[in-house]
Each structure stands twice: as C-alpha cells, then as structure tokens.
Image (cartoon, rainbow, N blue to C red; front, top):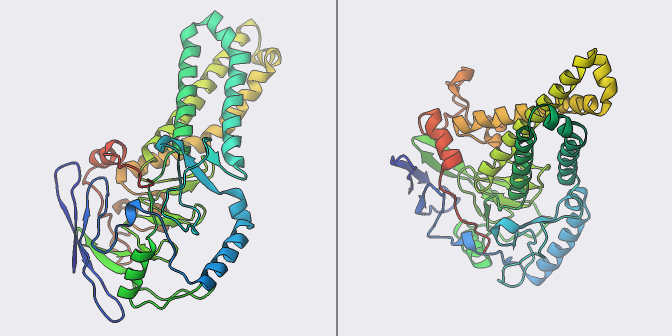
Length: 385
C-alpha cells in the first residue's frame, strides 16, 4: 500500500493511495505529487537522467538493427526530434542507444526534422495572409480610418508567431527514461524475464492508485521502462513519455503537455482572434469601397481582398472550434487524450453513473479553479538536463 499526496494551489490536500500487485511479491513505493508534479520515488530517480539500456551484446546489435528499420519508416522520416531552444537547446532523448550518461545537446537551430511539412505550412499560411492584408488592405484602412487599426493587427500577428515558436521549441514535459540500473532493479522487483527486441512483451500488471477515492492505473511503459505517473502517456511519434500528455500536434511539430500547454492555449486563441480581426478589416475595406457603387464593383476593384476574406472564412471555423474545445478542457481540467478516450465523463453527458466511467478526480471543484490551475499554475522545470 503506497501513499501519494497532491497539494494544489488552493491549499487543499489530495490524498492518493496506491496498491501494487505483482506476480510473486508486493512492493512498497512512496511518491509525493506536488502542484508541479515533480515525482520522487524510492525505487527510481529517473526524472533527470538518461537511458542506458540494459542489454547484452547480441541484444544491443539486434536493437540497433531494429532502430535502423524504424528510422527508415514513414513516421520516423517525418519526425526525428525537437531542439527545445526555449529550454537552453536541450535535445530530447529520442535516441535509445546511448552508451554514455552525457546529455545530448542539439545544434543551434529550432527543430531537427527530416521533414516538418505541417509546421512550415502553418507558418507560410499565417505569414502569407498577413502579407496580403498589409499589401491590399492596410493602406486603404490607414487613410480611411486610422493607423491604430493596422497596428493592432500586427501586434496580434507577432503574438501568434511568438507563441507558435515557443510552443514548438519548449519541452512539453518529457519524462526521462529509466537508467539501466533503475530498469534492472525494477525488472528484478517485478520478476520480469529479460526480453530482446522483437520478442513479445512480458505481461506487467498495472499498479492501482486511488486519487480522491477514485481508482486509476499506473501502466508500465515498455520503452521507457518505468511505471508512468497519472495522466502521462507515451507518444508513439516522439517515442517519449510526456507528463500530463494532451496530444501531439503536427502543426507545431511537438507534443503538447504540462510545460507548454498554456502557451499552446494562448497560440490557438490569439490565432483565432487574429483571423477574426483581419477578416473584419478586410470586410470593412470592401464595404467602404462599395460606397462608390455596388458591392460587386468593390470586389472587382479589390479582388485580392475578396479572395483573402473567403480563405479566412474557410480557415477560421476549425481554429475557432479548436479554441473553444480547449477552453472547455481548461474549465473541466481534462486533457484531449482523456476526452478522446472517455476517461472522465462529465455529469452533463448523463452517463456518469456507468461503473466503466470515472468522475474526474483531478478537478478543483469549480470551473474558475480548474482554469486557474491549468493556465496559471506553477510551471515545472525541464527534466532534460
């Protein structure tokens, strides 16, 4: 029986009780969860250390061959890893075969991809729409209304760019894999047979925890070789476990997790606001032009503005929907991953009585407190050191 304690910002204390079940023995692990979710366990010091695989020479060779095959796959050809420039250019521990304990640091560029199509596509679309606004609409609006109208648009544009790059270049909350000694101790503790890449995974029973009286499972990660903390998930694209995993966003080329969620939230909301504002300015431009005649003549006089307005109308709906969805997630203190899986079903759906569903044990009791904790809570430091 283990005890987990979480102390939220509101001053209340959440007690989490853990029961560990294994094949031949039971273990006892004491873990403390703080607001920053800095987990310390008696059996693992994995949070600030890199992986040193526990394998024989034959297994090492097989692992290298397996990794080479993975690198040739389509997914790995799309994503290799991020240089987290906002965290002092620390290289994410993507490479699992590392024979020394020295932290891997990246070259001084933003992201290290073979191909980062969606990120650059999003960047090009945003910059192109802003350029079209400056070329075809800004001068007319300055003459007819005021310079402030264009200044506000450019401030929003800079905010979108800054939040986009910060989200892409920030460590989302990667949990450093267990070292060889830690993995060996845990496997010995769990009586796991040694297995080689390509073999079927041994069965590991999850550890049960109770958070505010609600049972939850701590699943064992076969890649990082430790029991994942609550709300963390292994990203198959980045090949790392991320604390408070929300989702992997291809448009920023990075996972969204505990450390960069608030910046991502600011990015999508500022992008939605920018789209609405520029769309309103373009429409105002066309309406002012129509004073000389009909609206059709205004479109003929400035066809680029009409095309720009149509593109904004088409694109803004998805951005507005995403921004509204994440506002809902912040108010309820759940993640995209939990919402998709139906881990916690809010009472509004009317199925919370179903025993297969859980009421969210991480809620702070009100939408205001949830939003305050998610968007304004303490930010943990990166573990990639």
